[in-house]
Length: 270
Ligand SMILES: Nc1ncnc2c1ncn2[C@@H]1O[C@H](COP(=O)(O)OP(=O)(O)O)[C@@H](O)[C@H]1O
Ligand SMILES: [Mg+2]
Image 1 (cartoon, protein in one colour):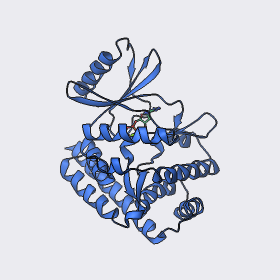
Image 2 (cartoon, rainbow, N blue to C red):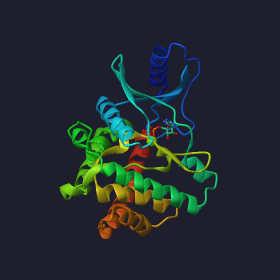
Image 3 (spheres, rainbow, N blue to C red):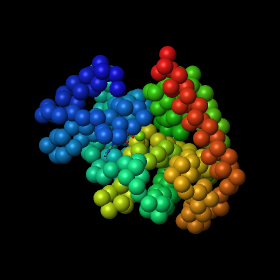
Image 4 (tube, protein in one colour):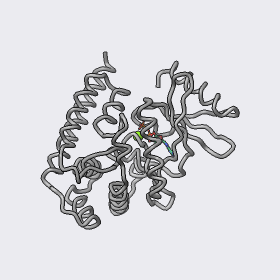
């Protein structure tokens, strides 16, 4: 995080929580590095500074997830001095990223992904018409807004156009999904059980195969197989999937990530 921006964010945290003494960044800071935490009277509070349209969408999504009993941040949207941010109570747990780093076994990872597929299915059943109408309600618009935060505008528009094409399909296959379930966005309890979703930027209206392919790509990187993801999801949703579409989109997602990584590193080197 740039120092002057960090200072500004810290001032805002102090302004909102008058008694904030220690303000820290999370141990695993996330891709945008725009999250700060502090201890308030009611416990640890998280602040995520973000694009205004994403903040509004995330607050709406948070309410829908709460109503469906899906563990995720309980977001309140706030604005101070033209800065928009989400405020929410810290969810106890550590990220799957840390657990995998500490040697979590394949069976446990597989059980977590099965549970996540159940959550994706429950999310897809939520009436999300109101989210679809919002400026960042679709995954193409949400990903354009998040990529602008870490890359240049042209890259963001190119990737968003690819995302839009990958999301074409039947109306019946559109639903609310988390399309960015990286291990850093999944919280795990002390008992190695799923404890919550993080990063509501990634929850938007998506095409089913796109959302499952994004998840399958992560599972594959952790040593799992794409066909297992399809088997689990077909069994729980009683719907058959277009497996070759998912396979092709996993390959495209991997390619897209590689391109973004190179572009981000090239612009940092300049
Ligand atoms: N409620 C929370 N409980 C625990 N850790 C959190 C919480 N919110 C955020 N974090 C930590 O902050 C990191 C970044 O938050 P995230 O919303 O994923 O931001 P980004 O969009 O930058 O990826 C997460 O990967 C996690 O380590
Ligand atoms: Mg994240």
